[in-house]
Length: 171
Picture 1 (cartoon, rainbow, N blue to C red):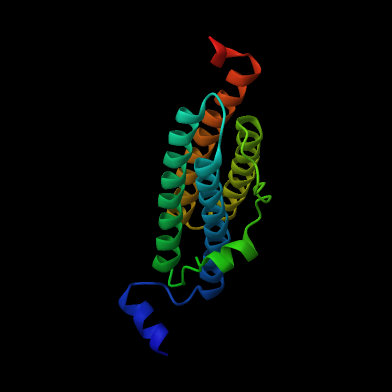
Picture 2: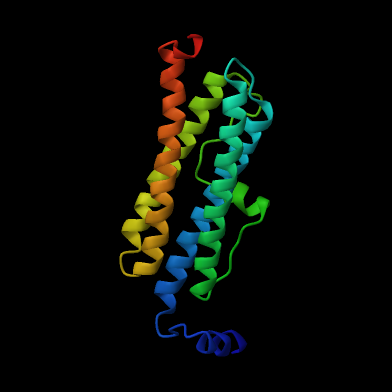
C-alpha cells in the first residue's frame, strides 16, 4: 500500500504494473551489464602494458567513467518507473550477460579484443532492449542514447586494434 501511494504521488501509472515490471527488469539487466563493462575498462586501465600504454591507459579510464555514467542513467530510469535499481556488484556479477573479462590479461591486443567483444555484446543487448521498450518512448530513448555511446566506444577500440594490425604505432 505504501509503495502504491508513493507511486501515485510521483505520477506513475499504477494501471500498468506488468509493463513497468518488464521495463524495470530489462533496465536492471542492462545495469548489470554496464557495471560489468565499466569494471572491465577499469581492470584494463590498471593493468594494460605495451607501446601504446599511455594512450590506452587514458582511454580505458575515460570509457570506464562514461560507462558508469550510463549505468546511472539506467538506474534512474528504473526508479522513475517505480522500480528499484539493483546495482550491487554481487547482482551485476550474477546478472551480466557479458563474457568474462580475462582477469590476467595485460597485453594491449588481448585487452583491446576482450573489451571490444564485451562492448559488442552490450550493444546487442541495448539494441534488443530498445526494440523491447518501444511502448515506452522515454525508456527507449535511454537505451538508444547509451547504445550510440557504446557503439562509439567499440569504434575507438577497433581503431586501436587496426592501428596495431597495420603497424601504425611503430611510425
